[in-house]
Image: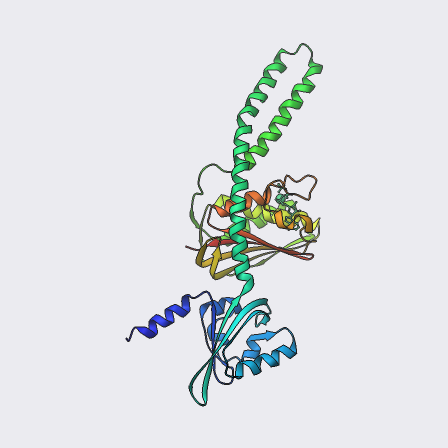
Length: 352
Ligand SMILES: Nc1ncnc2c1ncn2[C@@H]1O[C@H](COP(=O)(O)OP(=O)(O)OP(=O)(O)O)[C@@H](O)[C@H]1O
Ligand SMILES: [Mg+2]
């Protein structure tokens, strides 16, 4: 019997639903870790805050009606309620209110919050991971098929060149050789590094600093690269070179989108309880590359992670597909949100 409160605590602490307990004056008495993640604040910091400070309803009328409803003493559930949270994040959530009355003048309120976007995102991720894996496999298969005949083609052109009666004709064999080389480079990019990731403890800030210094060489000083690092982020188990490659592709895209002028921010955060594809992780590292460029063109926004999707004349459309595949090999995921003036690419990597 004595173990039961401990067991209840563990259940609450491991739930992915946000659970709040308010006293009769709607002051916060308890919040579970899922709530700390949603509000991006520690429980200690939020304790004693009134409901109206934690959660605002998007229009004033429904806000006061909402408080009346909570205090009515009836339990109820509302779906798709738009909320503005303490951390200014806007979410749409399903909310259940359950009054807990132990005596006539001692009512507490149990509130359960399930952000709807979260479930939509998880469903979308699952589908996206599957689709991307399939396209990646087709592309790699195709690249393998091209690789061997390409070598033969190039070798034959070289032999032919030696036999040519006149040097004028070499112009043609040179075209074959240089185009074969170009294709070879493309095929190598698609096939990517051979073998499985070589995992070791990697400090994400060290990787980001390297990416930052490489990018700085490529851009002029009108592109500013800012840092917003979370110093408490633990090391991740990753392949150092693959991680650099993925982040370089993303940051290079941001530079290209800025067309010579603007801001890039490299941001890191630890996030608790995050679902990637089918797996739920206790702790993940979130590495964000944020730029204030024009945003991803609307017509390709949904398909940028597919190979050969590009808006740039000189682009091959492989950068993001390759990055996504590199990160997926670490059980991670790259997500993207974009609007004019604010584009965020988030690389999510599980921590143990
Ligand atoms: N930060 C960004 N801002 C705006 N658009 C972006 C951004 N990042 C990517 N994109 C869009 O996504 C497209 C695909 O990017 P991806 O890196 O896969 O290919 P690419 O940059 O066109 O070519 P490659 O990387 O192979 O040289 C880009 O062409 C661009 O339209
Ligand atoms: Mg690119």
